[in-house]
Length: 478
Image (cartoon, rainbow, N blue to C red):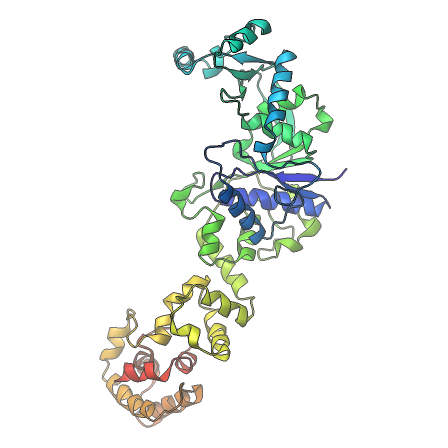
């Protein structure tokens, strides 16, 4: 049996972090077992589904390194891979259920549903307690009402029995017979509902495993009923794995109030795809070697469902930044230079520097940033005559030795004709200040720094000065 796992996003927005994790788990599981990873687009919400969102989601998945074997953009033997292109099949199956007595047309209006729901609530019953009014209406009468133009939905008849399955993460799960009522499978506008078309597609596309977030666990109750109606035996059911819920630091479901939640946002902010995939992988799964930093594409057979956690996974931006920092430091300086360049304004002096300068700059700064975009905080140290002062600048500039340092350095810098000062020159100047002017310790090092860089703290002083254009330093000392 070939393992077949799918990710089925709805193209109603950008790819959510939670969806990206589900896609990643599905992809890694398929690859670990020599199987197929399939992308299916669930676009039955015609009003909100947009082509640009579909394209964006596919691009973001590929950016993360998640490449599908079958999908709407590459085809496959089980297509089409957009639900909007499979509508007639859903309608035919819904009416087949009706003809077989497994479902029925329901003519309850929205006003009637509201009244019945209020009645159920007042009697402390489940809201669906009275939704079966047309359950036993003879099919001929139902068809006559439809012929007369009455609006209807198609409801599935709950067989009224306990349903049990074994979840790959949760273990044995049992749903009581009255957990749901007769639920809608086809809306009044002819559109199928999620739990109905999802099962049909998974069955027709021969999915062997389905991974999704824990919040979808209750959907399995309805889906098991649909599978049974389709004639799928227990042995033929796909194996379900409901992975831990993603939560914010307040332990609530991850949402926009916790910060960026779409992959597109993280891409634009300068995160590395390897870092984001690495971090997402560990939000609900643990590496058998207890390793944190790893390439997800090198996991191979190490990735399996026995390492999934049941507990909610806390999404921590600071940890993601740490992961990004570790991955950034692995890159070649030339690659880092390109990354920095993409987040610096096009007219900035940075872009005018030589390749050698950029490589030296990156070698120094890659230890100071977590994201490519962070580099903008440090650029004034190199390119501004008056960078924003840090906390100890005022203290250092007021020391009685600092004016002496400024006077001496001003005279020495004025003699420099090259575009940049060398590290050796800085060493010579500091030795003179120490030996001849008897300035030592903190007054020497911090005083020299505030005179040459405009700040009391920062990266290695000699390297910073050697990367700062001479005209900038002259302005600082003037």
